[in-house]
Length: 314
Image (cartoon, rainbow, N blue to C red; front, top):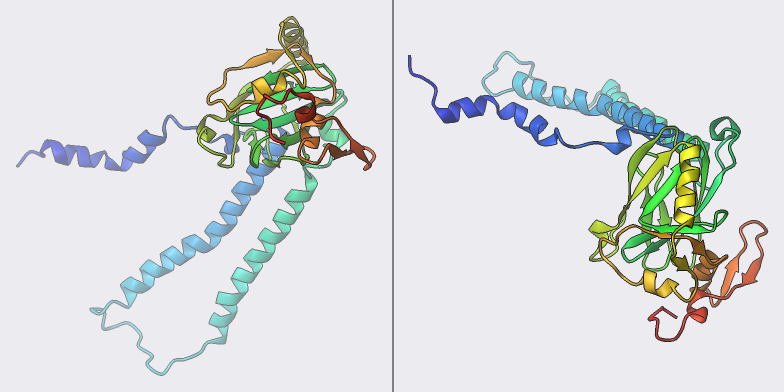
């Protein structure tokens, strides 16, 4: 008996190649760490299962009919005068209609139950005081301002677990998107505008955050760490940041907002109040809308406050 050559032995393991190539990968969307992420995961899995109800039977039927009605099978049924079947019409139009209806209802429900602009329901948010975080997308880094704590960070978002997170999001560059896959929904960041997002981390962890929309040459490095930790540990982290010497205000902002690829993590012990509002107003002739009252206010934009040689956009 002839022995199998080395190439034939390797071919035996070919089916395992995809699993080997993906063994080091993680799918954050399928490993949620919060209620919004869990809902997104469940909707994704259900929609996949519903669509497989069509894809799998179609694939099986294609192979079956090709085999049954092959040229060499002279015993197969032959109906040269057949032209119409009401049962088949109901079948091919009825099932897709039902599937589209199911997916439509599910998408409508899932986009309303955790509306990014509405605070999380009380039974989900718990009793802890929500944490407000203002997010600014820059080229190519993320600035996080904690207005209630008076601190800020670049490319690192530390948050307490089991605490509702209220995000205000804008951009001081081109339009992009703020996304922490394990916590939930993506939301756009646009210059001169404010978007909102409400999330919660139900467990501790170090999660990937990123820009999910292409924004130029440094896009691939526009990532950050979202670190969820117990409240006591978060309080210690806040005190650590407050012990730093760096400050962020309308004058120093242009230095840190300048384009930079793979920017390191940076802490700011002091942040000028209403700096976020000034960044938004910069693109609206110094005007912005107060989200709490709906009134238009005149703000001092960061471009007005900064010196003329900062390179800021007018």
